[in-house]
Amino acid sequence: MSSRWEEFYATHSTPDNFEENKRQIDDFCQHVNSEQKIVLITSGGTTVPLEHNTVRFVDNFSAGTRGSASAEWFLENGYIVIFIYRLKSLEPFVRHFMGQKFLDMLEIRKQSNVTSVQVKNENLNTVLPILEKYKAVKEANQLLSRSQHYFYIPSNEMPTHKMQSAEGPPTISLRLVPKMLEPLVNIWVPNAYVVSFKLETDESILVSKARGALSKYKHKMVALKMTRKTKVMLVFPNTSSEISLSCEEIENGIEIESKIVSQVIENHNLFIS
Image (cartoon, rainbow, N blue to C red; front, side, top):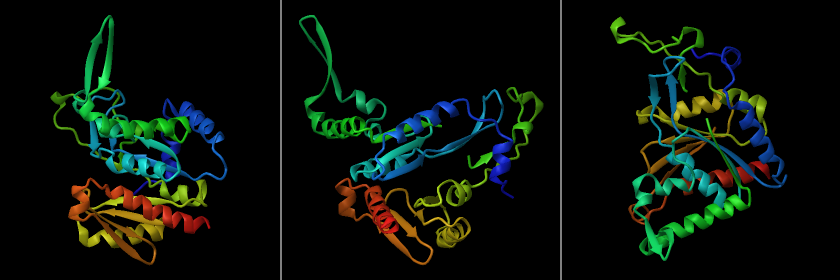
């Protein structure tokens, strides 16, 4: 049975960087015009440490593709974005140039006694538009990124030091982290348009699970991830619709997140009107 969120907070210490993150978010929001639309996006996978002095952990795989791409499309549509992500998961704009791919786009030039790093001419049309968008967003103070489980081991049940293999195979008991949708919708931001994303490998239970979540938590929409990048179902309390990419759209590099965000924005505008 999942734990209540009050109990979870009461029995877990505040993260070391909590106050600093809170201060930065408060400062960021102070400069936001009251007429501007704000979206908060959480992105990336989760880990469960198995020791206080962590050596081993259980990992929930998620690269953060959907969250980072969605952030860009909200920015494109004039939203202020607060982006909470897992460290080393994908971030808006940077996601296009991960790893060695970015270094391959650069070249070193030496002229007289001056050494410079430049984007190769053949890559300029790729890098320039993304860099221009990023600079515009930063200068307009539109984006704040902060790095921060569906399961956890209670603090009092977690060993302090590294588990020893000589002691035999460990028995690990995980507990469900309480869904923060409940206090989010009912207490923290009751007037917000809240959307959750859900991944299931069994498509036969997708819609029923989404409707169950909507009924329980009273938020506005569930986006069901049916395949990795080409099809999503949007489920509302009384209706549902499917978003997909055609073969032509896939070939042209269209991201399904652009369609998801477009639908969310349309519904959000109706919600606040």
